[in-house]
Length: 278
View 1 (tube, helix red, strand yellow):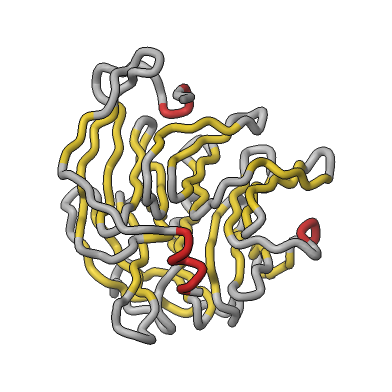
View 2 (cartoon, one colour; view 1 turned 120 degrees about the horizontal axis):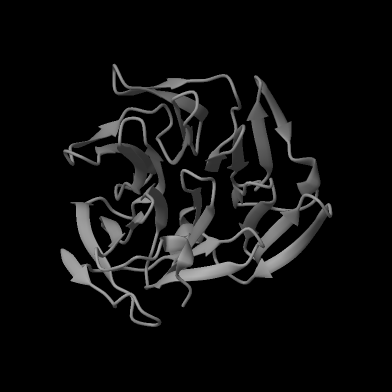
């Protein structure tokens, strides 16, 4: 698993605050703020808006230790590791029911307990988890088999539309079209047409959505949004990105080699993130 991960991502350095372009045409402007640094390869970002908490995992350098999960208070910037059986890796948030899920590459799925700041194992699956996404149910992919499942109403079901198709990362839009990626590129299962189409050759390392259910994804080389017509728009071109999450209407949080960064449209901008197309 680490071999695949390292092939997709490279080393990176980042200044504390960077000003990008202005807001008109090709000259829009972003402001960047480093929220936390020192975690190697921060990955699998997810935000719990009810508590303003970011969850992410990072790579342990000691041979054989794998990954650990971290929570970061976005207001105070306090951050701590989360004890997870088998090591924490993937994260997803059920906003309606205030449940934070943590997936382990070794031992299935747990739930984060805010009182104890620990992960409580759930009887959902025993398979190793690569990525999770919540949309009217907990979608997750497994590694090394790269199968896709959804957990809903206490039942785990394999996504039948993906039978015979590998999925490493996935995201679901407001019309329940399912975008997914594997080593062959980016694909979309169009629910109305019941067909799988290739959507690009992007190497996707994360899918996420905003509070309105709009879909976004990141690659090692940029951040992207997906509109209601399934058109992909590039938001930011930058090397060595590890993942992303949406904090607010005009705010993205994304990860680089050893930094977690807040990316916000400057106060001069009247556009929203979804309006931007490079």
